[in-house]
Figure 1 (cartoon, rainbow, N blue to C red):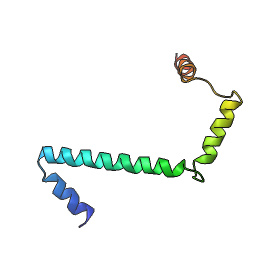
Figure 2: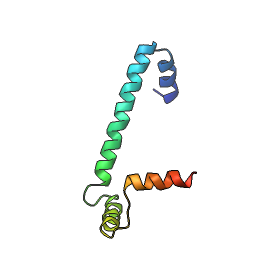
Figure 3: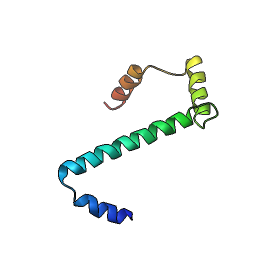
Length: 78
């Protein structure tokens, strides 16, 4: 079955069934995202160097709170 055929079949579904399918697809994508994050930030994963950099910047005092960043953002837009 092709994607085009699947899309055409979906168009024929009643609205409640389309919503059910959309919910299922959304959950499937969320699960795939969670699995990707798990792989990226597991030991040896490609996200580990970034995580180490963030930890270093926090330890060196190079970060600010979310609230302070938000205040500065709003101030810059005035």
